[in-house]
Image (cartoon, rainbow, N blue to C red; front, top):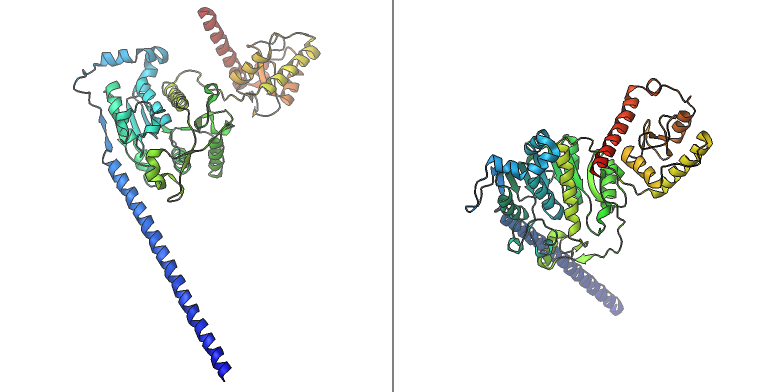
Length: 457
């Protein structure tokens, strides 16, 4: 009996201790949940407070910027003089189209600020700029107009201050806001002629592009300027033709999943990223790290940016938009592929064909000429069937030697059929009016360019 009572006592003690341990565990868990909830609530409150503080600067309604009191009011004639070089380039009608246009720039950092500035300089009379962020010390290396005095000020407010000294006649709208699915319709309202995506957040970038695509709004997007250093590799291309850009690759894949395969022009760099080292969050943002991280209290990391590169992205975007708004003739940016090996192969094929068919041991066209013809004239596409991976260059008129005005791009099967045609074949009748006119227009344009440069040189 004594042993049984001893065992019962031990069991009761263990049960009591287990119950106590369970209670303590549950209490600890509840306390942790309450603490986490409190922290998250505090962080959320802090974000809302900062957002309200930024939005206190917001100018939502469109307005004409007023001139500083010390500045004179510009007359229409003075504005025409300011824009005279662009007018000479685009023509009076083209310049009028630019001046009557409305462009929205989403993102006012390195790329967006330069885009907006060059649109302003180019004569666009109605610009809306949207950004939720502030000017920081570390962002001054790439911002178009911000100065030390602007640090801590919303970027769009800083831009507004400087733009009024440059072109006081321009109608400028500034929105201190973060674009999202909830407000995109409002922020992009007003039937803009173009929207510029200069956003560095993937989700927001995709929301903007998909909205513009769905509503048939012309949009041009900036890809990654971080980690890039070679200005000669900055290019304009359709999103479907980009390469060597990690951001462009991700955007391209996600857009494909959304059913968008092409039709989005982008500025990007074909430079292969190397020597990439993540940097810590800017010192002035350490206290707000949760606002720039994927999860609260996770320390954000950023990619290094050479200050000159975002400005080149912005200028490229502004140039593309201004030329399209002004209906600049024959403007079709080349999607450079850096395909020197392809050019060598095409040149080798041409030399062999010239020798085999025409008994010519020499050809006046070198590899550089082949690259120009392949890319500039025919954009790496077959005249008949479009893009392909078995392309070559052949004589259009077989009775004439190879030249800039007698070479067309075809795939190898099409080239074989073309080369087998009788030398006196009526190409208009054989290929039809559309194809014949395309070739004639291309050659005529090239002759015109050659004549212009011959006159200059």
